[in-house]
Length: 99
Image (cartoon, rainbow, N blue to C red; front, side, top):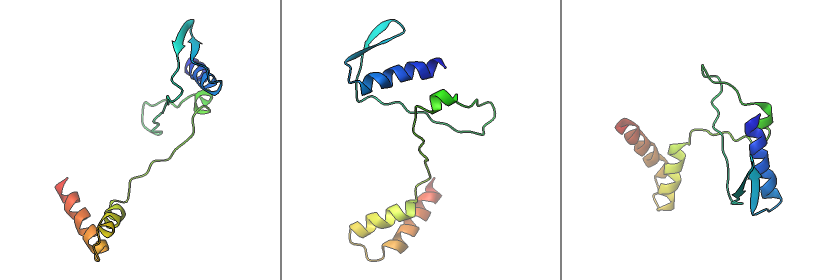
């Protein structure tokens, strides 16, 4: 696809440690710390999957909902609370009700 060809040009330039690169006839400055990310939510109606050539240029990452109770418990323990587990559950229940 056109996108995969263009993004591959950027990646190749980063690997080659170039200061500039040519994209569709235009010479562009390259920031070697740049990054690109794709959010995919497969299974939704009307969404078309990414071409395999573009998918191959990205690393997959799975994102999950954080365990807020565990995070709260660790924060409370770090502050010295001895009943951190119980307090964390209460805080999460409170904040859930406040949504």
